[in-house]
Length: 106
Image (cartoon, rainbow, N blue to C red; front, side, top):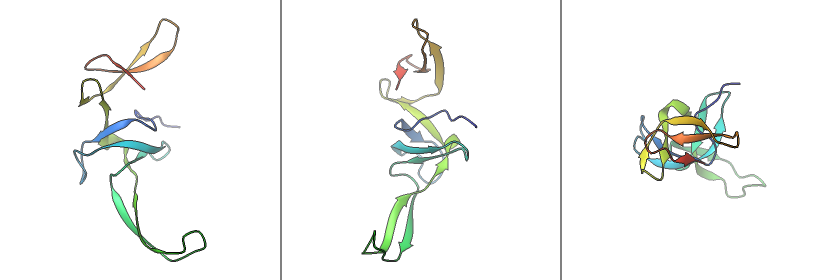
């Protein structure tokens, strides 16, 4: 299964497409398709008819997946988008770190 450079819960910056420059949290990852769903990004409208679960129906707005290559991890310490580096700690754990400031990322 392919791996993504971001995880659920990460704050990312969209770097290309119609939502370029927007920042949001990753709601879910779809690694088999190489896509992520980011909060408030790539909103689409879906026309739904009333059901028992949703008695009102109507036009719903929800986030659609975007390709993982179009987002960049955002470091909260240096307040800028960054690539991810991997580092082993003294206790043997492997963690992701910011390439710019060296801060450990989630």
